[in-house]
Image (cartoon, rainbow over all chains, first blue to last red; front, side, top):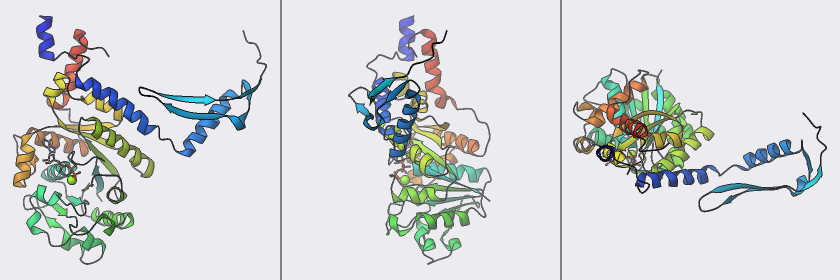
Length: 92
Length: 267
Ligand SMILES: Nc1ncnc2c1ncn2[C@@H]1O[C@H](COP(=O)(O)OP(=O)(O)OP(=O)(O)O)[C@@H](O)[C@H]1O
Ligand SMILES: [Mg+2]
């Protein structure tokens, strides 16, 4: 019975080309959309800074952020040299 | 004062011209005053799809360059009084007009009609800029294929970044429910999820489109055409009616729901 239903409804095997298409589409759109303008990169950078400087003192001049593309994924990689830890008020 | 809608896609051959002709005709059938404008300069097609190719005297470039008055270039459809076409120039190239001229032209066109539908050429260059310059709303046509959806995404990005058109609407064309059912075609939900804009309607793959193009009679004129029905529904949505998706339109989503219920599909 289940078998019949599966046949009628068309079971989606992982080989179904639609699944391949969805995955390829996801990646290709991610790549395309990642084409951030320099202004957007700048504002991303300054927003990251804003958050981090609450906790750490960092060497802004040597901070680097960039996208690294791999076959199946994309990563935002940041290298942010820490100069000093700030003493955080301990909270309960 | 009418609204100027541009029909665009990025990728070529996904159905912009077919969509423009059918929606324009359907709107005219409903009694609205419509002008169709072909901006695919050098590769005009809308005249042929509408069956008006033998009556062209002047074209869009003749109008923008002042060689004739707008009224002289408009071709009135024989079937509907309230429908006319402004054909593209065939012997010039896309640089024969610029976005500023298009803005002025669209402003003039919309004075006496309810809708101006602009058929945009493929691509993202000058032709796209011309076609979108005078429009206040965009209909993005795509097919359920990776390349077409990708290009649609790019177009949506450009529309949102460079124009006033923040909320373009989607038309999914050449949908094949059987293939969707087999898992061999992206379904409506997939495409909607990726593009994240409002879906205006789904048009099935349909032989009647080819037959109607052969004859120069848009499919919406044929009561038995499924694609024609889909286009009639879309035109009603354009004027603000609430029209539920027809069952082919809903096929993918419906099957998914059942599959999920039966645990045949996760997510
Ligand atoms: N729903 C459909 N079912 C079957 N055939 C279709 C459908 N939609 C479009 N076609 C066919 O696909 C072809 C391309 O359509 P059309 O010319 O409308 O695309 P276009 O986006 O305007 O192309 P271009 O980018 O070259 O201007 C035509 O031959 C048309 O008949
Ligand atoms: Mg076309």
